[in-house]
Image 1 (cartoon, rainbow, N blue to C red):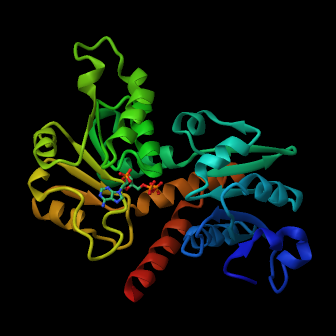
Image 2 (cartoon, helix red, strand yellow):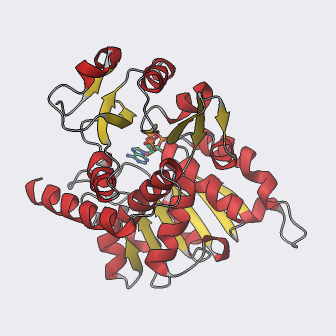
Length: 315
Ligand code: ATR
């Protein structure tokens, strides 16, 4: 058994399952993938429903996602998760793409069915559920600022907010062109009969203090999707003066559990939550695609909390 497998391990069932109790029939594809928590999220749930399935990590180089999925399909896998940086490539190699994945422009879950590769995206719907669980509010009712809207995660979350019909969407990105490109794709969701034009409900701004401060009066939910905060020494991606007590602040980072952004938001009296619920719900929704009717939410939550707790103790 290996912590991380490669495409070379997919040549035969006997090689892949050497030393393992259960056959590998689900995998997460990424690069790097050794840090992925998906096995810890899914394996206890697979065991709980007596699936007889092992979940593995598979390291795949860019341009080889199609080849990897073909090999998994030939080995009778149920499906796969796809993580950074392969979510865009996966969209282009599956046979069919569901509506969410199409709208979000990325695939994070694959189901093999009747010889076909079906692509889904549970990141967007997972985000909506996470916000509801953490803050008891609906994305559609909120004015939302997405920090890092040009990145992979940021684009998916911003697109989901737009599809939900959120009240306002402010896209913030260091490389401003990427945010403009996304805004162009999303503008159709903001063309309504309301008095404000799309320009006012959908805005793009750079990471510049004065603009962020002015905007923050008109925002309910701030979402960090940048990688700023992953290291404990990182600063907050947002100046403290932007944070207000009425804000809900969601950081997609879950380790460390309280980033500097969340710490500062908490201090001003804002409500805060980290990315654990997003990780949990995108996983539960993927599980339901592979095993219709099964929803091992609490098993997955317990396992994830234990994993992250022990990881943060050692980091
Ligand atoms: P992923 O696809 O996993 O979201 P990514 O594409 O590397 O990862 O995106 C990371 C996001 O964090 C991007 O929005 C990136 O901004 P750029 O598009 O300008 O690169 C943002 N980011 C990373 N480091 C940052 C920093 N120091 N300040 C502001 N934004 C940063």
